[in-house]
Amino acid sequence: MTSWSCGMCHYSGNGYQHHYIMGIRIQSSFRIQTTLQVTNSKMPFWDGNSGCGRGGTPISMAYTLASGPDAGPAIGPQHCITKVELSVCGSNLLDRDVASKSDPFCVLFHDVDGNWVELARTETAVNNLNPVFGVKFQVDYHFEEVQKLKFAMFDEDKCSTQLYEHDFLGEFTCTLGVIVSNKKLHRPLILANGKPAGKGAITITAQELSDNRIITLTMCGRKLDKKDFFGKSDPYLEFHKQGDDGKWMMVHRTEVIKNTLDPVWKPFTVPLISLCNGDVDRNIKVLCYDYDNDGGHDFIGEFQTTVNKMSEAQNAVEVEFECINPKKQKKKSYKNSGIIIVKSCKITRNYSFLDYILGGCQLMFTVGIDFTASNGNPREPSSLHYINPMGSNEYLSAIWAVGQIIQDYDTDKMFPALGFGAQLPPDWKVSHEFAINFNPTNPFCLGVEGIVEAYSNCLPHIRFYGPTNFSPIINHVARFATQALQQETAAQYFTLLIITDGVISDMDETRHAIVQAAKLPMSIIIIGVGNADFTAMEFLDGDSSALRSYTGEEAVRDIVQFVPFRDFRNAPKETLAKSVLAELPQQVTQYFKQRNLSPSNTMPE
Image (cartoon, rainbow, N blue to C red; front, side, top):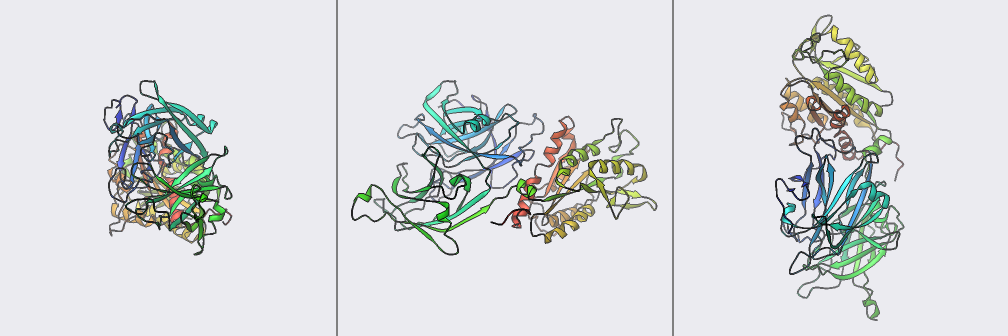
């Protein structure tokens, strides 16, 4: 076994480093510390029992993709890019087991600032030196970047997520560009010492996931052949599509149903492009097997069909297929090896953030600016509102960073700009919801330049005061977002940027306002300027636990993203924008999907 040293799963020989959190929590794939939901399942090798191991329930893992505390703010991949699906199979892998063959699984890493960070894993193929993995890797493809990938094969030895517990079978490193340009890549595996891993090789096939249709199938079997001596059969299905070269490629496995000749499999959903390249008339081969613990699964039968044919299974109408074993067909008395039934076939669209934007969704942008006394006298260089000779300060930098990105998603580019915590002329009453252009009936500014101009103009005319109340501005935007609840398509989504220097005074009211806003097409971005204690802001950013109102009501979704500006003072200017806008695409799509709203300009199915 190759020598390992573990320090949070750090493989000293090859520089593997992955940090992970056990648990099931769907998160954005583009946060400051990006998390990617992957399933470390042993499909179809489940036995319905809890725990891990070859017969265990699949373990869901959220890997935190970070490159260490000294690497500066890590930026996740952008959402609106092409996704590429990578299918992996191995051949002639090293045999590390004494009594049987290796039980390989493949791990995908990508390069982040010189460190290999884990992205995902396939299932384990039991007792197999030529595995064809059913779990596919989905990778965001950036044409303008060099994306280094490492595919590492391991022989599963123990019930452990730690890679050093398993035998290393070899690896292959290349760029995503090389894979995409070749479409299908066959290369030898290399050991840690640079030598070939025997005759072991890896084949990687790339498929662009540009088709956002998904297919959900509900299937069962009837009177399948009995294959087990002491029991019935443990059937599962495999779905294969035919490649351009005429060869069949597996695209999905169902779970195993134990000891039955009449299995009912759980409904499953796969991208239509994975199942048939988006071609509903393309042949699909469905094979039925009886699962055996030793990996020597018994063939029951097969049939061929198309998505078009399976789509006839709707409105309680089922479609039946004879499961045929070609070897048994020679017998005159042979009829079939059972019946496979498609109980339901539903094709829908899995809309992305870009689908909604291209469909005409407008992002309605509002800015809320903190003018409380803790910011300091704006005429003094020590003030956070002091505009330096370069014509900037942290408030302006935050406005520019976010505004110049988001303004492209609003056609009229007219944005309300509000202030809070200041005394206003002529009566010098404190306001927590005022237009910084001093026009309460028309608080709109033209573009980011208009916001900056209104901000600069208002500074000499107001008195900084307090307290720091967020709830009035949150409720202000929420009133407009409430009107958008009437929309029948995904037409509008509201984004509030709050820039503040300190601790919230109305925490209970703010929590309540956010919990209510979470039901609306609305997100809140908070940027903390200065060096204050922002613990309360991080509490509002419900990444570690769901935010609750003082009434006990829990937010239906996480809509707050907080970042301290100080973390980005020495970073490239685009870094702040990428970070604060990181969760927004996911929040937009999550809301519209929860409401079952389609893009405005999408043709009906």
